[in-house]
Length: 98
Image 1 (cartoon, helix red, strand yellow):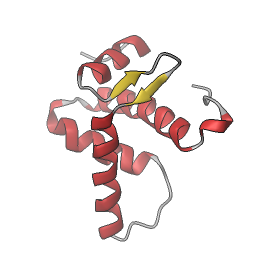
Image 2 (cartoon, helix red, strand yellow; image 1 turned 135 degrees about the horizontal axis):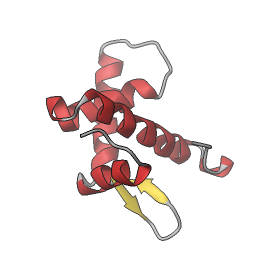
Image 3 (cartoon, one colour; image 1 turned 60 degrees about the vertical axis):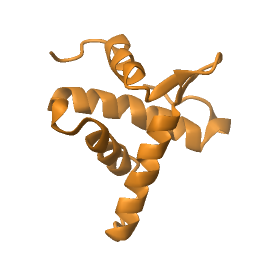
């Protein structure tokens, strides 16, 4: 079933322990951070030269969900995780617009 709202996407990500609420804002969880580290290692080993945050995000989501996540849900989860990951990398600039 495709996600229709951000709340559904966030529910999926929270149930997979990929996001957490720290009292002030939504942040990537430890499980997500570990998956991103493994994705970065894979990209470094493959000598990936593109500097696009979507590449490791999709790689991490595929590692975590595999074929169990339909393409439209993968895209919805990726959109949320790219925003959250970017916010973690540049916290002084505040949240990015959706």
